[in-house]
Every structure is written in structure tokens, then in C-alpha cells.
Image (tube, rainbow, N blue to C red; front, top):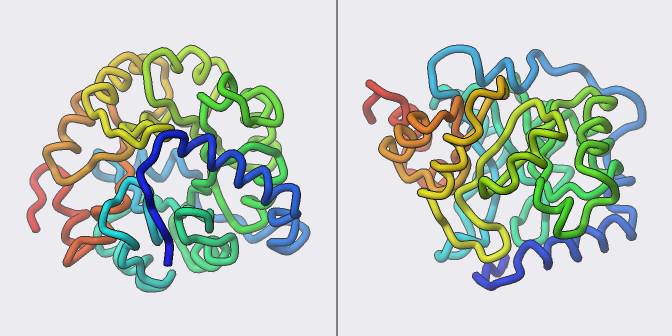
Length: 271
């Protein structure tokens, strides 16, 4: 049973847990040496193609911000069926066992079966995680801008972006507030994610996310709205604020018909 208490200090606790995993060599034990088969498309290109906004469907088995226990997450094959049925252009997988119920092995199974590019949505602190992501078949990796000044990263944020590029991955740098934008943009990310949820307190603030998205416009970097998406209304608000794509996790997984729910998020679509 995955326990999901909502408590202050969640991000700090995740950093401690990931450091333990790194010390135990968890990320060194996954994937085969050498280069995995290349995915068909870059992550940024995929979400820019087709209808707007781009849709990113996320697989996770639990969420600390979810009050009803574990999610009804399917196996890799069923998840990919749902994503394709909903018109997803890319997918995200949380490979973290602690508090999310995922695994690096599951990530590899999803990436190995997916025709869509996959985002490695872990709490990345160290280049070893980036190299593991590449071995598992990722096309992009998530990095948290706030960990550069709050502590946790093994080096400067920009150095992890560069490490991702050396590994052949794109870097999605995530921010939660406007104050983080200069640091995030200076790292030269491929995409910028704006998360409505504060990962330290787990509080959701959509208004802050909309302000942050609006402030991030005009830099030539694709913007992704993340968290707090219950339906088309939130997607429209994110899009008006400047989001090129949205990432949908809990509501997608929990929907009665996940494919229909995902399709309903685009303007003009109906359940």
C-alpha cells in the first residue's frame, strides 16, 4: 500500500530518499549498457505537432496530492492504449517508487513499447539519473529549478541540462513561481514546465501558475502547464496564459473513459 500523507516538507523528503537510492546504486543497476533504440521523435517536436494544445498523458500509481489513496493505474500496454485513444502527443512516466509507486523497470517497459516520446519525470539530482533515463529509453528528463538554490542538485542546474543534452535527451525545467524563471531560463532548457502544485507544501495554486506562464512567454521556449487540470476549463486557462501543452496525470488515470477524457480537453472536442 502506498501511503500519501499531505505534509509540509515533501520535496525535502523526496530529496533525502533519492539521495539514498543514489548511494545504494539503484540508478546504476537499470538498463543495458550502450545506446537504446532511438525513439521516433523529439519530445518538443511531438508536442508542437498536431492539434493544440499538445497533450501529455502521465502514468503514475500514486500521487501525494491525491486524497483517495492509490490511483487505478493500468499496466504499460493499457496505459499506452488510453494515451493513443486520447490523442496524446507524448507521455510522461514517474519512475519513482517512493510515494509514487513507480519503478525504473516499468519506465523501461513503457518506453520500449511506446511510439510516443517519453518524459523521465523523476526527482533528478545527479547525472547518474540522467544516464539511467537514457538507458531506459527516455527522450526527455525533468529537472526542478528550485533545487539549485534550495539544495539537492549535485551541481548547477545548467550542468544537468548539459548532461541531458550529452545523453541525447531534452531537458524540461520545471518552475512553480515567477521568481524561479530567470534561473530556469539561464539554464537553457528545451522546454519549460510550470507546475501549479508547490512540491514542498503540496498546495495547488492555479492563479500563480497562470501568472508564471504569462511571464514566461516570449522566450522562444515551449511552455507546459502542469497539475491542477480537472477538465477543459483549466486547459483553456493554461492555453490563454501561454501554455503550448498540458500534462495530465491523476484525472486522466482516474477517468471512467481515459481516452475520451483526454480528447475532451481540446477545444471543440466532446466526451
